[in-house]
Length: 367
Image (cartoon, rainbow, N blue to C red; front, side, top):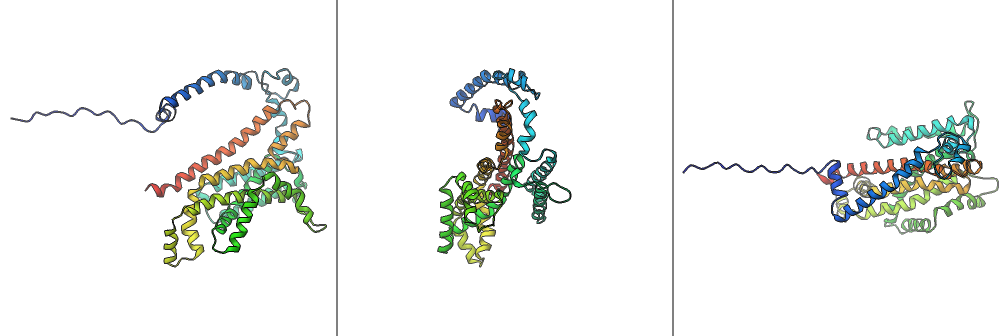
C-alpha cells in the first residue's frame, strides 16, 4: 500500500523576548504578585499625577514675578525663582559680569569627560588633552592673565565647583585606590600595615569630619606664614576619603582572581607588575565595575558637603541665592527640584555608562 502523506501541523510562531511588550510582560506582570504591585502603582500614579501636573505646569508661574509667586504660593509652583536666581545658583558668588568664564570652563571640562568615556578617544594623547583642559579650566576660573580679572577660589561656586571637585577626585582617587588595594594584599608587612591603617582610619570617620580636619585643623600644623588654599585641602580630603572606600571594592575584585592564574604567571617568568597589569587587574576591575561606578556617583553627590568649609557648590549656592532674598526664600522646593534635576542628569549618565562598560567587559565571558 502506498504511504499517505500526513502534513505536520504548523507550529506556533516563537514568542518575542525583546522589545517593550515582552519587557512589560516579564518585569511587571510576571506573576500575580508583580501584577498586583504594578496595578497598585498605576492606580497611585493616576490619583497623584493630575494634581502634580496641575501644580508643576498648569497653574505654575514661570515669570520672575515675586508678587505673582506669592499669590500662587501653596497652590502652584513658582519656577520664576529659577528664572530669577539661576545664574547665582549655577555660578555661585563668581562676579556677575565674568560668568562667561566658568561657563566656558565647565563646558570644556564636561566635554572632556564625555570624550574620555568614548573608546575612539582612548589614545596616549588623551592624557595631554586632560592637562590642556585642566589648565584652561583653572586659567579661566582664576584669571590674572590676558586681561582676565583675578578671582580668588573662595568666590568659585555652583556647578563649576561641583564638576571640578568630582572630576579631579575621580581621576586622582582611582589610581590611589588600586595601589592601596594591591598594598593590602602585599607580602611586605610594612606596606600592608600602612595600607590597612589608612583604609580603616579613613573609613572610621564621616566625610564631613575629613573636610573639617582638612579645612580647619590641618593649617594649625603648618609652619608660620605657610598656607595651602582651602580648595586644594578640600580636594585632597575628598580624594583620600573616596580612595579608601574604592580600595576595598577593588580588593574584592583582586580576591576573586583564582590563585592558579598567579601561579601560572610565575611559571612563565612574569614579574609582579607584569602579572598585575596583564592578568590580574583587567579581570579584577571588570568584576567590580558597578562598585567603582557607585563610588564615582557618591563622589559627585558628596561634593555638597563642602558647604561647611564655605565653598558654595551647587547646593550651597542655591541656599546662598535664596537665603539672601526674602522675596524668593519661600520657594526652596522649586529650587531644590531644579538642582535635583541637575544631579540626576549627571548621576543617571554615569549609571548608563556603567551598564555600557559592563556589557563590553562581559563579551569575553559570553563567547
